[in-house]
Length: 166
Image (cartoon, rainbow, N blue to C red; front, side, top):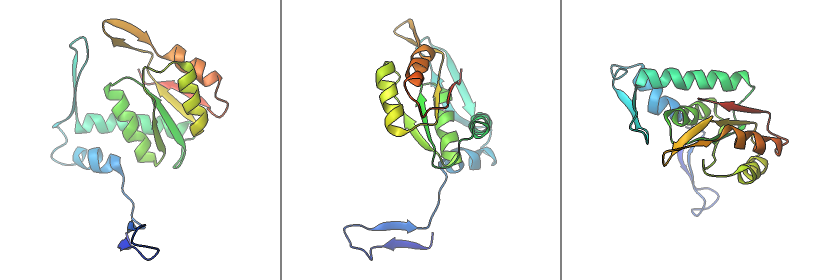
């Protein structure tokens, strides 16, 4: 950054850390993965069925980088909107960090929404890519997501790609 505080327009409209840049993925994952902390648990997830998955910082960094590379292959750049229509699974965390790493805009879409609500958010945001899951477990029943995502995408002309991270 060039200046900590710029209140030259008005004290009511301060600008902090003018010219500064920060990358959430680096600060939360990559710097730890590259350090002696790399083999420590970064993420512990427990599913509804009792399945427990643990990711070290290095494993999470690898997953974030795979998603990041895939998004870049799809042409996602800084400033593009990427929608994430996923349940609360580790892949959703990797997607959020990957989007941040690129400098794209993360648009979370509630996993309980139907196709019309998802399509409305895609259209309003101009999302370029929709990341989703094939399905997820909710109260013991499998909830399909990909079919809903495809239906929403069909009603979203700006959307170029739907990708499942399952």
